[in-house]
Length: 262
Image (cartoon, rainbow, N blue to C red; front, side, top):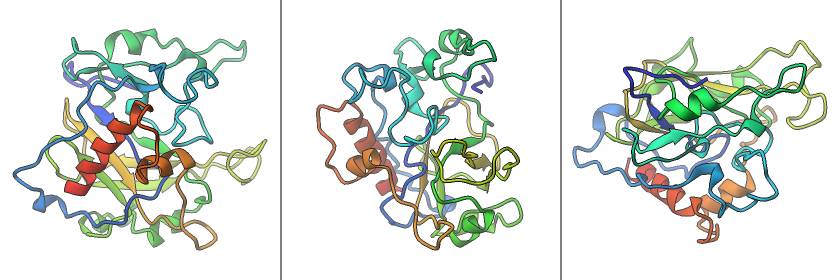
């Protein structure tokens, strides 16, 4: 869950997760441009913006980028709102309707985070769901670093990118697919009774306090040998076909500019 570091939590813009990006190679960390400019600093309102498509029909505020599971991807700017009074310009805005519930049906109280946190933990793992990816061997084929081979962090064709949007430098990571499948066996994501196998991306070093980060996946191999496909909502943002009335469109365009510049 979100946390603080030195009074200023890191803000993570976790986007493009569970999706294929544009296929453009990013440079290794040492080659980041000295003239870097961050394009995605804006006052976008997150899930609570009433102009969001589906605002009325999606009371939980689930992110359409990962429609299989509410609260994913996590962390994500979708779970924040603009707050000019905070040091990061954002504040946590977790929707109580989306939170896990106890045996009596009571959701986790979000007020401690929403009232006090202006970002996410600097060391939290990054979670998403990639339908069709249930084996760690898929990660090797996708050039995604694992705990047994982190050398892929130096590859120009790395399958996962953790980008510091304030500096243009990439950050070392390792990843794993959740293998806890004891409850009901492996079924397709979203099926009734299925076991959800999240993709868990771990920063190899704690992130920097107060910085923004972007997470992107590309050319991710699935169990059947194909490639993971983006959800329709992300496909529209990436393909520049999302309506301009969608307040997230401009925010996503800024993120894509960051990735393209990198």
